[in-house]
Length: 220
Image (cartoon, rainbow, N blue to C red; front, side):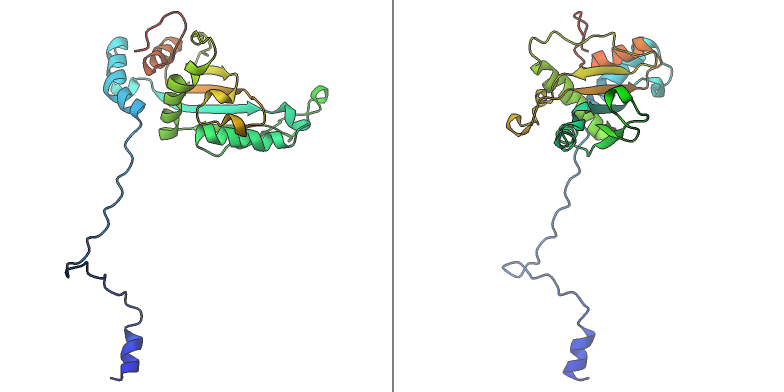
């Protein structure tokens, strides 16, 4: 067989890995270890869930309430006069949540506010899984304590289905936000959706997860 033909037949084969100095083949790169579960989720599984099961007498561990999702939203009435407001709000919410927000649009026209159906009026993001647990951890341990003269949050902002709503006055409370990069202070709404069956169970769950309710209630 000619040298030219042998070269064509071997062209598709990968070259063997070059040996390391001393003639020893180089070891393959170690696979990157996956990130561990969020620290608050670990605490929930090991400490909070068993305590809730004992406190409320659940017969099945699947009955223990937990977080299901967290919804963040920023309303942008100012976008009618400031077209850049939408872009800036999206950037801030993406920085806070670690997830790209979606634009919310008006479902109907409101003449008094010069709003037409389908007009962009805000941005929102829905967090689940790891990002949800990480956000809740940062919310109660980093953002809320930075509020000026902070005395806790109301334990009464809970609906009948066990979902808690909270208003944040300005996005600068989150350490991820660079004060010099924002165009203005904006508030955002936080809705924490739980699997609790009633207000009492939901309130106790959030207390034990670290929500700083007013009234000196136990944080678990």
